[in-house]
Length: 173
Image (cartoon, rainbow, N blue to C red):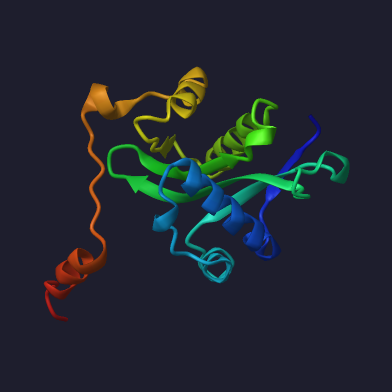
């Protein structure tokens, strides 16, 4: 299938927001999405963006059943490993179901890797839900390592009141 991968623009945020919700529905967590396209615009297209994003676009003649030409996205940001150095973290990789299996996911993933390599990143990291076997198999087929068993890492999160409580315990300036 003919498609192109390009850097997202501020004008793409409504489409990205739509696909974020589609991904959340697939992951059985639609109630967890609290972000709006306005926040995506603000956070991704400001002086010091919090993330970067790529979109996959098909020609008008291949648009989705609903009429969309933007059919996938990869949202990522940079992190730093005190052991390895520069890293890129892939927050989301999503392709609309009717376009899966046509190389779009691979194109998005490969482009994120290329962008990271150009910025001297030494690794690309991401997380996948344990039940999402199709995605786990996709990444494994591309050479990704599952660190859950081999290294025993756990993802830890502070949010909501727990984040507030922790921040309130910070030493005063």
